[in-house]
Length: 289
Image 1 (cartoon, rainbow, N blue to C red):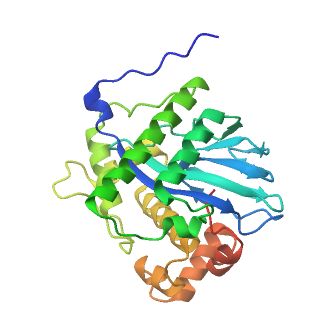
Image 2: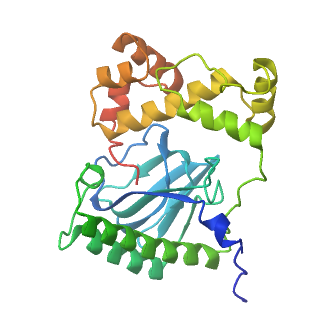
Image 3: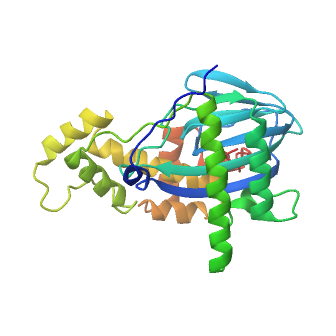
């Protein structure tokens, strides 16, 4: 089979990509034998080093057997781990200036990828040294670095990213370029993304050339949702991430999202997810795989 032709874009376009290296961890999962609630996950990959994993995403269920990798799209999903499951996992965000992911929803598949697995093992060793096990929670803990250590960390992730991209190309998965310039809608989205999370009433950028009604239509045209729904979805995504990370109390999360009382936040969270924040946190989803 001929090697797939890689997407070619000018260097100035590739330079606009924003990368955020979220974690590399290797270790056991916290809860087995039950399905997780629906959780938000970034792009990335995990390898099943022991046990097996089942994923529900995009309306289908995917089996990830021992020795295989799962390539994850940045979206919502549920997962189930067999007893004793152990993973080697990398999470990242790679986005265009308009906030869209490099691969959109082109991932969510399982496959054997021995070359990438070796590259991921090398990345783990570069970041964590001689440690054999690092949990998800340990991998996302805030840490300080010297300039030299930070540069080495960035270089290790960038080398791994190159191997990841090459592997996806072999599976004929291509990056999705950013849509052609949509100056007004991009400006509107950037403004809404930058509003404080406790800002529950959407507003328009200063001197925006169109009114609220037309802005609502514009957002519906490009994203299929209105201003308030956009803000609500953004708050819910952040709420899920913060509850799952477990680094803040539920009261701190509630106040940070604009709720006067934690009970109001709990009711809102349950309405959108089907479970309370405490159940969500305690259900064993303390990792995004």
